[in-house]
Length: 267
Image 1: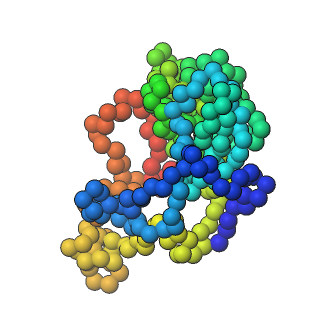
Image 2: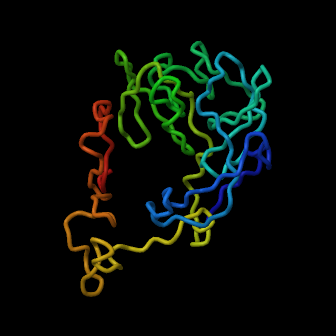
Image 3: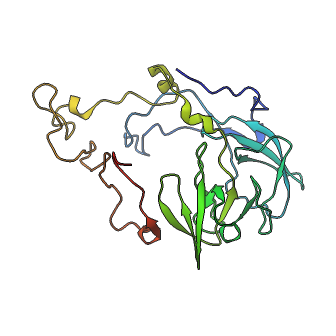
């Protein structure tokens, strides 16, 4: 079992009351109460922090007041104060420290934490908190230690190499933050015991091959037999994992994919 030591990194223990609230977690159930995502439930209660992913305050310098832990995401967040007095939570880059500043502007320098349109960011720069459309809010590359690389400018689009290895086109006027997401050591954590999974709200997973044929496509057979079919399937009978491509053939963003990510054992 391993943990990440936050001593000397985090500067505050309690979140801002004005920017936090209680929230009821779905725990894998839909609005009718039926389980739609299996193996979820329980877990320690979490206080939700309102994170600003839209960055609507442009051309106003912001100062990082604190670096804080957020139980709802893997990267660190920071309480920032804008020059006009407004305070918000944002997702922090790896190298930024309390007391440093950043700005959201089309003319911002290429510095960790600063936010610019993609067409203003030079090729080879690492970015995170990426929008899919202008002023639509950050949607991509938000997990601890992740980053995308700007690899080309192509007319109305910018090519980005995503953490999965996929090269994807994003409209050039979408915004992104310079740098890498904080807390890169998160990927080195070994939970070590089943209880830590339960604290995180993850319930035990049962192998499909241990079920009956009525419950799973891999079920049945004498003893510890194989799955009895060529391709691995989910409980609902859909292809998944180990080299099977699960992307929908007519997905809306297929035309934006320059190079697909590598899947399966040869990845």
